[in-house]
Amino acid sequence: MTSTKNQFIVTISGIKGNWNTKTGGNGSGTPVKYRNGGSLREEIIGTPPTFEDLVITRGFNPAFFETYKKLSKNINKSYHLITMQPTDANLMKKGKPISYKNCLLTGVTFPDVDSNATGDRAEVTLTFATSGPA
Image (cartoon, rainbow, N blue to C red):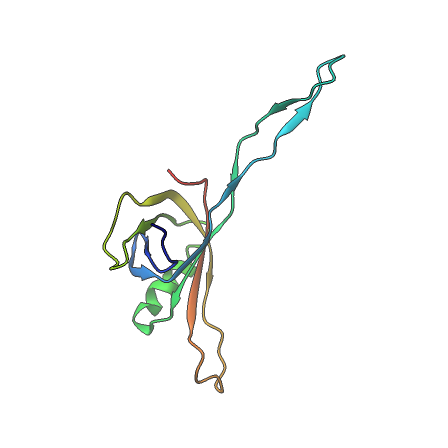
């Protein structure tokens, strides 16, 4: 059975509540191809993988304003555990979460402000460097 995008719970250690979106954290590697002297066949060597930054957002809640201000003062200093827990259709946890350990906070983006945008939702975005899932 497949899932929809809403069937995950995302959490960040040290910050109360769940998060709405998570993008990134995907890994890739660059293979090295070469030929030994006189060989027509290429040999391929894998290099260590690299991982995209994790970008995590949720609706801005003024109750967390002080937390976000504190986080913004700890950019490139603060490490967190980020988990992505799969759920079933009733949002009950299923299986083991994907865990990203020791993610370095690299950005805090506060909501843009527009006094005429009454229907737009304000969001806060946190960006983390990661070395991949544990």
